[in-house]
Length: 139
Image (cartoon, rainbow, N blue to C red; front, top):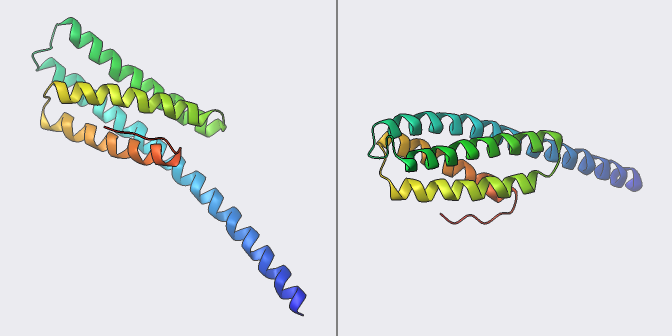
C-alpha cells in the first residue's frame, strides 16, 4: 500500500512538473508576441516623432531609423528562434544589444511622450525576456 502511494506521488509530481514546463514555454511565447506588438507600436510612434523632430531630414535620422528597424528584425528572429526551439538565447542576446543602442538614442534625443511611453513599455518587456534567458541588461 505504501509503495503504491509513493508511485502515485511520483507520477503526480512528474505530471505536475511537465505541466509547469509547458506553461512556462507558453508564457515566454506570449511575452515574445507581446514584445513584437509593442515593438511595432514603438516603431510607428518613433517614425512619427522623427518627422516632427530636429533630426528630420538629417543623416542621423536615417541612422536611428535603421537602429529601430534592425531591432524589429531581431525581435522577429528571436520569436522565430523560440518557436523553432533553436538558438533562442543567442537571438535574445542580439535583441538585448540592439535595445541598448536604441535606449542610448532615446536618452540623447528627446522625443514626444507617446514615443517615450512606447519605449518604456518595450524596455519593461525586454527586461522580463532578459531574465528568462539569464541575460544582464543595464539601461
